[in-house]
Length: 311
Image (cartoon, rainbow, N blue to C red):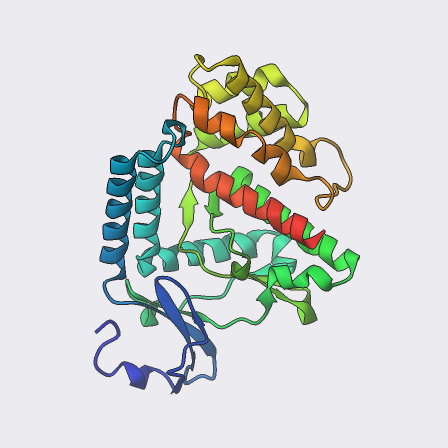
């Protein structure tokens, strides 16, 4: 239905057995008539409607049972998730995001040497089918057994990508799934795939967040509080316990930017140290974080977790 009744004639070869599968679709390997190997991602029928229904049911269950603390602001989480998942189900949007991201990488003098984004075939793509260049590599977490110098280089590249995305391009791929980063050892390259969760941020938010990160890197507690209120992370009426937890967590996140030189993610215990404030956040939070923060923090957490994994 998507590529027409003669869809098979558009490919020289098409493997009916998927090479990968996920929650909303599966990927097939195929070959074009010019010999190009491609990955054809096909969305499961009615998946978009099913996701919407599942989220509505979840909201109803949480509301009726009152099992989650108010500070979690589950309505906002579901609203953001609903918007993001709807976008992920639109492969036309994903194709546009991937082509945009590919050009950003190609235009970057540093990253184009170490990362690669597969080309998109728009003529073989629709809202529910996405055809892209097939790239090689293993999920990046599998690089954990490589030599230290290689692991350091991989982690450095991932962090540079993350910083470029937010502060230079204001356009990020926010899904931190390790399988979206394929390390290809023969070329020492990271192949970046899956742009369904890409999103853009406005300049005001990014500029403010830069001030927040800079304040954390300089251990400037007052500026952390000031900018947090300006961006909407705080109302100004929080308890002292919440304010202290917010600042301390911010300072922990800022540690990798605190000084020049290397940072040992493996022994930093960042996740455990930030996690100790989770109960305070859920109990005393007065306002949900800005909507931009959900995807942004997911991205940064994923980058940090990968660095921890690579040691």
